[in-house]
Image 1 (cartoon, helix red, strand yellow):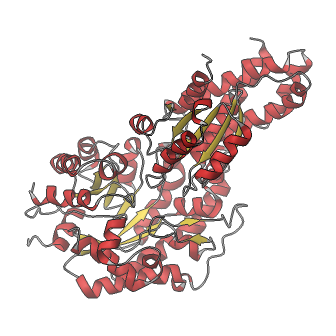
Image 2 (tube, each protein chain N blue to C red):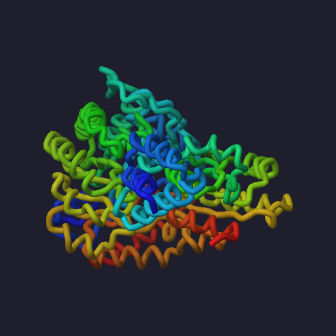
Image 3 (cartoon, chains in turn yellow, blue):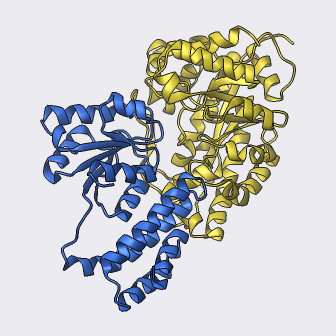
Length: 336
Length: 213
């Protein structure tokens, strides 16, 4: 196998042949202020304009040296298309939703032209631009929100979790089941537009809910979603999920993007033969506040533990120093 | 502890929100004083809820229901206490710093603090430094609690503390900080008086900051 960025990433997704070195990938945003300044494209344009979106994604490969390009920097593309008012932020601020359109758990109106809505269209067009530029050379990563995260956006996180606590099973299931088709449609469209792999972010994290909540409410739906999407999928759930790794492996995803608080050695040992692992450099203490040496050490630890694709644990803070991001690439260049 | 008090305690721990009101009324009609119901049943129950959360025996959904149950009980007792001159544990001003709209953690901490007998003023989310300072001057709380969930907004906490110093307000107030990306060393670095890693720790911290246990 030639050790090109595309080959390295795609092979690692299925725990296949190893090249000269482990791939470096970002299922979530690696945009920081220094990167925006270096390539001359900034937020909020990079959320709204496909060309700007694609250029900023390319900077992750060309300037930082990652083996992936990932053009979706917010978690609000679907939310905006489903009726949330999204403040798209600026160079120093990530986007955020301002309202919860289905706080009352009424039926979700999914627009017929869902994929044509500006916040959806922009991602699909950016993926196509990336395909024309680096297709077959660099792995192109798409991203969709799963029904759990979409439920947070539609009803409010606290409200949604309260309904679970109150045992409102029908209400919760109904919301999830209404939103799952949005996830499937967007993921399929992203593959058609040019994505090689799609990240499915669904924040059923150990910091909020129990493994049994996941098992009861979301696992059956994740199984259905993964069986309906043909292309490779990376599950992203941040926080401490050490107690549910096996459940994620069972859900049918090809890879799991995980945080530093889940020990890499332990994760590889427990589920590494069934699901590829992506991650897991710590964001707040190491990438953001640490030195390149700190980052390098964590990256080497992950590589030696057998993590398949090395990268930050989650979307990085905007003030992350660029040299810290580059330290991940340095560590991977040293090989296995 | 009497049977009716134990029943109230268990109702909060187990989140029996539809029964709590009746059981609190039963306890009152048995002649148990309102402040005892709060101190011995509601506060004790919320302490137990905090412990179970810290030990991962329960998660946020269960904690939200317990807090809701506790509040329902408290609502019945509040009017009774009004005439008796309530003894609050202290006044706490809580808010999530600028640029941060994530408030579930802060809300859980507030629920636990109220459960522990503190009077809490909730500033809400996305609070700018000037807004926080203005409220501190107006309310003069014993404690200011600052929350941030995002690494991008953590530095705002330090700015609030600096502004308190500039205005000469720092000595009269204790500052506690928390939120997912925050840790003890960060809290020390920005000069906070304390850090709590979860809602339960936040309550213990608040108690110690006002000179309690």
